[in-house]
Length: 419
Length: 82
Picture 1 (cartoon, each protein chain N blue to C red):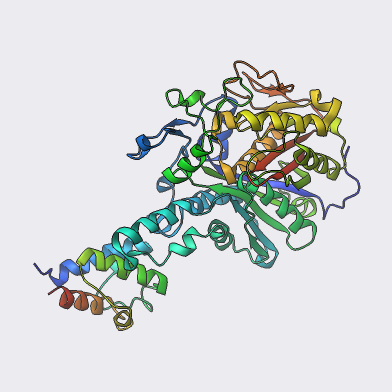
Picture 2 (tube, chains in turn yellow, purple):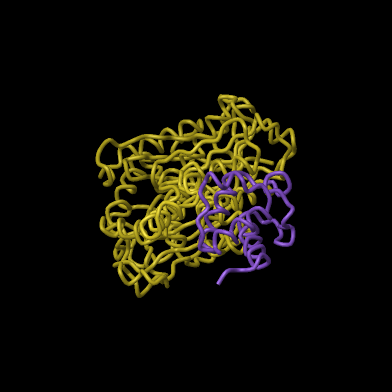
């Protein structure tokens, strides 16, 4: 299965991981909580909660104020704070390599951008006038703010980018970073996604779409992908960042390699603004592109970290897409829906779940899908539930799926790499 | 009641510290905002907005240019709030 069409300067590998999520303030605590089937969902205590139909969300486990000094907190939107924390961890995890800044890139996605900054500044404008709107407001609210924060931190001059494709943004960032490396624009790229949108306005908007679970009295059981009783997603927040480099570059510096980004697939539905294509044709095409881009075939796929947000329509459409893409090989891939534990991190989801997919390959252990008590009859997949599932020895391929409002589909194929 | 110069200095030092991380003890009257404290124009405007709020004064943008040292700002705020 090893892909012989690419040279080592075109193959892209992952050498650093960083995250701050509802399950933990770093990758290690997030991963161990995931394997243990823990939930990051809780009842919100803010005074505005009673004005909304949804009272639950999945805030980060470690607030940035516990990690970053006050001046940095004040100059960055919460989404930028998450991105900085995740990027620092990923960079240290990669061994903080010395890179020519002109060969260093950053791609940090966001689904919504600095929405809490924007709305708080608007409140200030209305209540106290234009003079009280702080000068950092625009750099804090712009969607590329977190990417710029990370670009400054890592001295990245090869290019700093921000894909915006709703809930597929984080995965699109990784795909874009692969393109940067393969086209020779950079030797190393820090890529990922961030989101900080637990605020009454986005919650009200998602609730108006009937996209959110209203299981307010059982927060830990609210996110239940593939279960017959699922009633929508749970809004989460956080960030995930990976350090990507060419295999040639990683080997030359003796870096530890978590896995290879073997193939990527990006498509669009052109079907509906917010509904998935019911047969998942575009999503299936993204998966097929990722698999063929890896020089692989569907039967090579042993594991899928599904998008599976816990909405009644979306989960089933993805099942159709997986079956269309993998055909008879579908039953050979075990599927994990980690949003059952993290909630839905929107623009960070694709990055955090790519990290989960990489760690599943690296540790040969697929995380469980929690809250799956009564499998939907339309979900004909081998879903990992209860305990983590051991993955076999040998070279393995796994997929991470991410889809977004607007009809965006991104699939990323990861492969194990012998050290 | 008007605040003393010392009270204004302490309040201003607190604002500078929150915005920039510079220890409040380093914010002394003779220090230049740009040359000594290395405060950029965006941070300076944030400090001005927060100082207006804290001391109940108005510091027009044109006057901000004249406030080169911490002592200049303290005097300005004291006069404006008198």
